Length: 503
Image 1 (cartoon, helix red, strand yellow):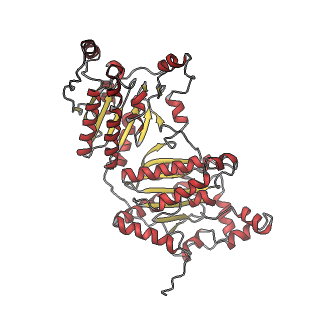
Image 2 (image 1 turned 45 degrees about the horizontal axis):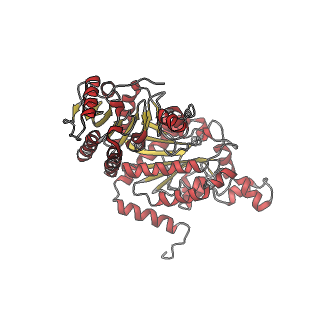
Image 3 (image 1 turned 30 degrees about the horizontal axis):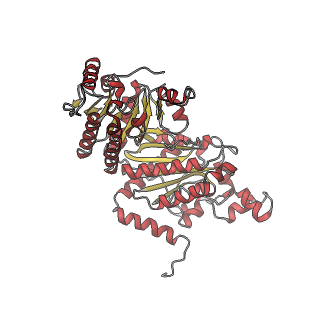
C-alpha cells in the first residue's frame, strides 16, 4: 500500500519552484463545540496547516494552473463546512480567471464531527466543479492514498482526466467502515488504483515524480494556442488521382499485420499526447484508444479503433462505443475538435454484446457525433467493417487512406448473404463500391491520403502524412462559424446519395 504524500510535497513536485501563491484565508467559524475545537487545534499543530485543504495558483513550465490539494494529516483529510467553503471559493476563482484546475484529494470523506451539514457540502462542491467544466475549462484529478467516501463520490470523480498514485486505496466505502458494518473485511484487491484502472474507472497510474510531466503535456493540449504547421498538402480530392486498383487488393493490404494503426499515428505524428482509458464508468475495451493530442500544432481529442488490440476473437463491444461517446463529451466540454480513427474488423457478435446494448450504442454514437457542436474529422485508416465503423464516420470532414475501405459487412460476409459462399468476396468488394476511390466519388469521404505504395511498406511516412492531413482539416474547420459548420454537416448527410434535381 502506498504511503502518505503531504500537500506541500505534492505542490513542490508538480509546480515550478517558487510559483505557488496561496488563495487561502483563515477558515470560517463553524461554531464548533469545545471538544471539536480542541480536535481542530491538535490537527493544526500536527499538520502545520489550518485546514484539510490548501488552494492556490502556480505554474507548470510557465503555464498557470489552479490547485486544490488535500492534507491527510489534518483529521484524515476530511471535509467539513470550512474545508468545503475553501474548495468552492477556489473552484469559483479558477472559473472566473479562466484557469484549468488540478485537484488532488486524499481523504477519509465527510468530517463526522460536523455530521449531516458536512455531508451535504459535497453537493455544492460538485456544483462548483460542474460550473467550471461548463465554462469549458479543464478539470484534472490526481487521487492520492487514500481517497474514499464522499470525496471520491463527488469532486474526486468528476475529472476530465483522472489518475492515481500507485497502490493508492481508492473506494467509496472505507474498509474500516465496511468491517464495522458487515463484520467482515472488504474483498481484497478491489479498492485499489490499479483495479480501478483495469476496469476503466480511472485513466492511469502515475507516480508522484511523473505527475508534473503529465500535467505539462495536458496543459499543452488544453491551453497552448494552436500554431498550425500545414505547409504540405498530403491528400488528394479528385477520384481520378487515386490509383485504380481492385477493391479486393485494398482489402487484403488493409489486413496486413504490419500495417500501421492509431498507435503509430500517435507515436510518430503527434507532438504531444496523453492517453486516457475506459469510459470512467467501469468499462474498458482494449480494441480502442482515447487520447488528448496535438497534430502539427493543433490540439484535439482523438479516439479510434486499435488494430493491435483486435482479433477475430476480440472485437469491439458496447463498452468501446461508450468510450467513443466519452470522447465526444470531452471534445464538447473542453471545446476541442474531435478526431476519430476507423480501423475495425467489425463489432462483436455475441450474447454479451447484444445484452449490453451494442446496437443502441451504435445509434447513440451516430446521433451524438452528427450533432456534436465542435469540429470533427474522421479518418478511415484501414478496415471499415459494419456498424462499428459507421458509428465513427459522420464527421465534418472524412479522410480515407488509399487502401482504406468501408462496407456494411466484410466482403466474405456479403458474399455469403448474396451467393451463399465466400468465393465471390472479391466481386462483392468491387460491386459494393467500398474502396477509397469509390468513396471519394460518392461523396462519402472528402480526401484520400496516398500510400506509397502501401502503408505497411512505409509506416512512418504514411502516418505523418495522415497527421498532416488531419491538421489541415482541423485548421480549415476552425475558420468556419460554428452554426455554418453544423448546418453543413447535417445537410451533407441529409443529401448523401440523393441526386441533385437542380442540375
